[in-house]
Amino acid sequence: MNIADRIQHLRKLKGISQEELADKIGVSRQSVSKWESEQSTPDLDKVIIMSEFFDVTTDYILKGIETKKQAGGEGMNANIFVIIASAMSFIGLIVSNGLWYEEQTPMAIVAGLILMAVGCMVFGIGLAYSSQNVTQAKRRFWTINIWLLSFIPMSLIYNALFSFTLAPYPLALLSYGSINAVFFFVLMYLVLCLGVVFWARKRYTV
Image 1 (cartoon, helix red, strand yellow):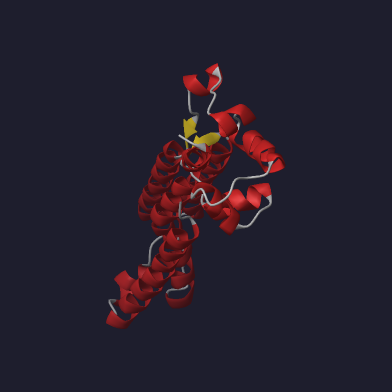
Image 2: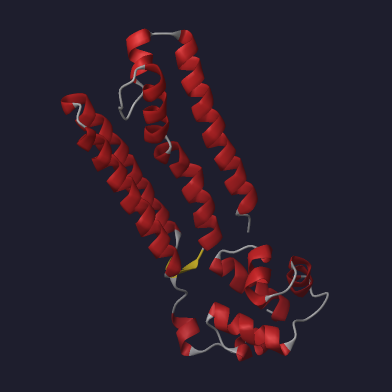
């Protein structure tokens, strides 16, 4: 690999886009693009910043000389925390709906939201210790979890408007059986979730 290949390899290993790397080292995205396409080479001060950011030596970026640390491992994969967060969000949704169906108490809603919040915290903390697929993990997190995280809040709002009862799933759909009510909830849910999915895929591209 030459210097262009090594910069691209390190960036993709980190899981970030050209734009994100440019922001980290204080250059334009076009500069990073030119480095990776061999149209230009980074100045020494930018090489130093990149070596600190990627946790490699300047010798590796410039000459491809690896240290034992680099050769021995590539760091934690951020996608692991997407799985954990998604699982906790799903469990939170099931627990909240199940408890409310059985007991119909506010604590059922709180329990589910707490599990979801913990899942989000685990994901956020995990990103700080990850060095692989960070941008990809962010895209996957939002693509999956918006469907889980938004369901209870949207149901609470919907129920407050139509049935005047707070519940983690849309009671009005069951009690009124109105086609218009069903259409309204499904439409708002799809618009929100698909909008976030589109934003995430556009924002977090590698």
